[in-house]
Length: 239
Image 1 (cartoon, rainbow, N blue to C red):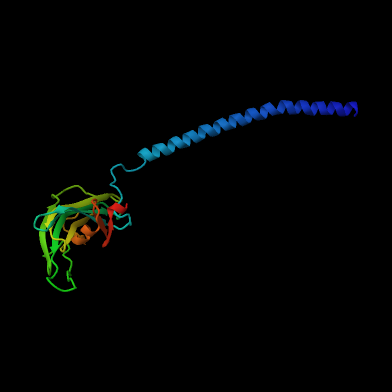
Image 2: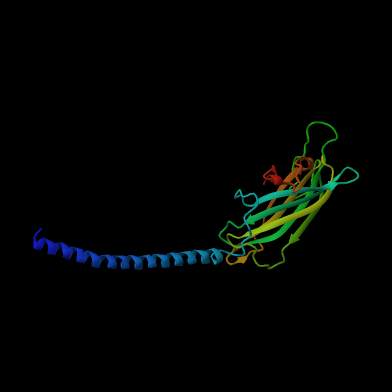
């Protein structure tokens, strides 16, 4: 190898030895910046998770089906009485969401409990029409309790656009296992017009209910009770 080639190799090796530390230094600085940016992004996500949502929004509707409103009836057997009847605890939760782009005033709320008695004989139990929340119970249904709450005049809107409101009816009854129970929740809505709630504008009435055959609660053999959502019953012990 000539002297010229040896000098060229030594120069290349020298340049390489000088460049390697500089490359590692630049990589270290870049890595540090990546760590800092990652930490800032993680902090931003934590801040958004803590403060980036409406903390006053109620939980999702029961049942999780996305219905609006969405409701579920929860029933427990609290024990047998000496006369053969049982004490049942019934809770009907209905969650209403304002899907409109304007505020909505809930002008009244109504809750109602009805009991259905099957006929003394026969294989068919005719309980139609369902009692709902308006008018008197008919047929085999008997209204046991009905209560109406009316919002005071000039009350502030209850639901801003996108907000939820939970309505609840809670009863404890003594009934026979062959009887039926129906809980209904009704309400009236008035939309905002021109920045205020027009009392002359008619209220939109709506009502929803769930029914249960009380003997099915006993047959579930679950101390936590059962859940009825859209007419379908599931035992809470299976969750």
